[in-house]
Amino acid sequence: MLNLDDTYLSDEHRQFREQLNRFIAREVVPRAPEWETEGLLPRELYRQMGELGFLGLAIPAEFGGTELDARGTVVFGEEIGRSSFGGFAASISDHADMAAPVIVRAGTAAQKHRYLPGIASGQRVLGFAVTEPSGGSDLTRMKTTAVRQGDHWILNGQKTFITNALSADIFITIARTDSQAKGGNGFTIFIVEKGGKGFTTGKKFDKTGWCTSDMSELFFEDFAVPAENMLGEEGKGFYLLMQGLERERMSMCAQCVGMMERALTITLEYAKSRAAYGRTLWDLQAIRHELATYASELSASKLLLYHSAAKKDRGESVRLETSMMKAQIPQMLKRMADACVQIYGASGYMRGTEIERIFRDARPYSLGGGAAAVMLDEVAKLL
Ligand SMILES: Cc1cc2nc3c(=O)[nH]c(=O)nc-3n(C[C@H](O)[C@H](O)[C@H](O)COP(=O)(O)OP(=O)(O)OC[C@H]3O[C@@H](n4cnc5c(N)ncnc54)[C@H](O)[C@@H]3O)c2cc1C
Image 1 (cartoon, rainbow, N blue to C red):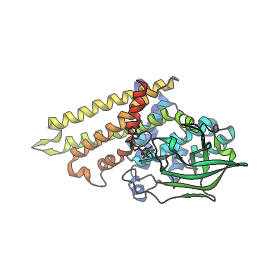
Image 2 (cartoon, rainbow, N blue to C red):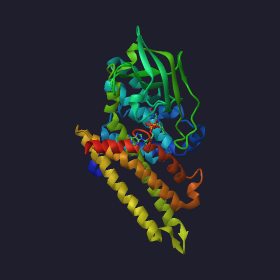
Image 3 (cartoon, helix red, strand yellow):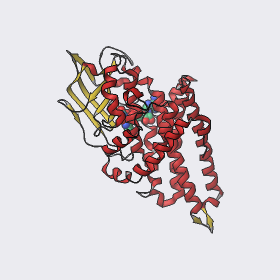
Image 4 (tube, rainbow, N blue to C red):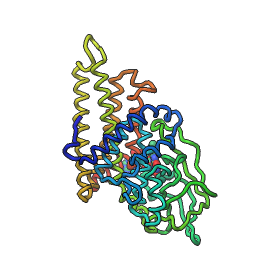
């Protein structure tokens, strides 16, 4: 597989990759099948990862983090994706690389001191609750409301398809605070602590894939959130979310790249060892060409990912690059996972095999964080 580490990464990035890769091989891969059955990551895992500094990559050192740049996000995403347990990758990145950065970006000093150390250490688990039954692509249709009453905001509404809904202690969520405002105006972000009167979660959703991560709904019924938990400016929450999109897309695409590299590695091994017609599958040109094509396409996508991260680290906008990536890379993962199952034959369709899990866990990346069609619209706008 194309190795871009020497060209794009520093010693610190490479060391981070090596440590995380070793940790995942030792602590995650052997135990994750059990977590798949339970439908949930153990709390202990967050604490272990926190202790080793893996959860603080978005958090400055003064709040207990190990802050890394955009290339650090790429390395983190690739390694959790390479685990091939999409649910593990989703829960951990939601916590560390999607929800936490919103507090880092917009939190007051008091909010950062209160929440970030516990998030970096893995003592407290975070969820990112945006989607509502009214739709996740067109967020301006959100119906959850927050009305100011004295020193509280009163929330009413419902969030759905929320990763970590049952395991998280804290949610970053968004509600309409101005019923008259149009478009993306009039939404505000809140830090919501789980529990208390008026806050409930639904039943655990039974997903097709990403089985190591839990998912459910959140219900707010006259749920009082302290005024000091408003995050960022009142009415500007939608734009605050938009500011995180480049990082979010980079993180999800890096997970896809890690998962594709793993899929290709194991399928190459399989094709080279599977006997057929007195030779191996690898000796069949059609199979060799298919895998060579995917290896080439994957390398081109990886180059775009690393280029975007390096550009972002120079302080430049990567809206076009990250939209292109998010439109293309998750789609390629789906196609490649399907092709790999085909090469495995029936054994690749059996529960418990790695390639079967990759096939299932590939699917959500082109739904969440900007559906493929929405991303193409975004690219078209920028052309
Ligand atoms: C496994 C998983 C985990 C998730 N975790 C979270 C989470 O932690 N927090 C959270 O807030 N949400 C989460 N989501 C929800 C996710 O963000 C939404 O599913 C996503 O935003 C799409 O919203 P929707 O499902 O309501 O689909 P809709 O918005 O109804 O769209 C349905 C389909 O219509 C098509 N479409 C939409 N817009 C356009 C367009 N402009 N042009 C052409 N076609 C279009 C797309 O194909 C799209 O998939 C998760 C979803 C999944 C599957």
